[in-house]
Image 1: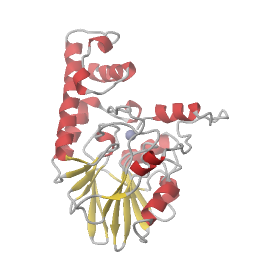
Image 2: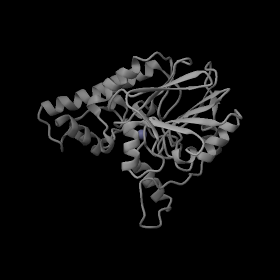
Image 3: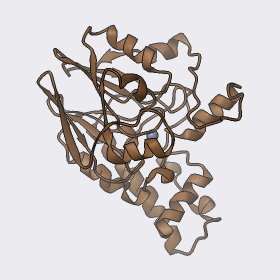
Length: 299
Ligand SMILES: [Zn+2]
């Protein structure tokens, strides 16, 4: 979910040997058998044709991949890292012989749309129009050739899949993907939950370089919450319900309100990190992240 993590991971692994260093440089990590088990494709209980290929972070495991299997092909939502194509296609082949015909992107980040280019020869890749712009501006491969502005649908095997854009949040190109018949959504990183594969705790990331907004985030979540669903695939984390999105939304609202209160009280950019008390939210936010929100809310 954040370019910096993959960068430091790659640096730690000593894999960046040339001066051609980019934030997209990636290589598969070595995972334990337990970690591999947690990342194995599984049916979503009670949701015919829907599978989850789990993902818990932006470093080791990537984002969650939703897999819809129909009699006329497969649709997936997101595709992890640039090295993930072989793993994803092999895991999907373990549950169906149908071809992957559609790839929907929740946003452009390298841990969600990283292997777009590998799918393009044989599948339609679809993303929000700003996700395409962000992909190109960041010089990532695989900009989605099919885009939409507010809402679009794909019909495969008689099943409708909807993509909705409710405004700015994690980026300015976030899509929420709804499977109406299964009452299930993939939220992308507008909603994340729990711990990374390494046990550290996830916190929301506002990608200001790509149009993200803390001020708009809760309104964007309200758009998502107005959809009809009971089961939630977060950008990263376990399968959840609508209630957890409401909890996340209220925590985010508190975060923004508290920073706004400090700004109104005249607290400086330098002091806001020490003055802000968000221990109850259990979101480890680095000082520069808090100050970036301060900057946005001070505008
Ligand atoms: Zn992300």
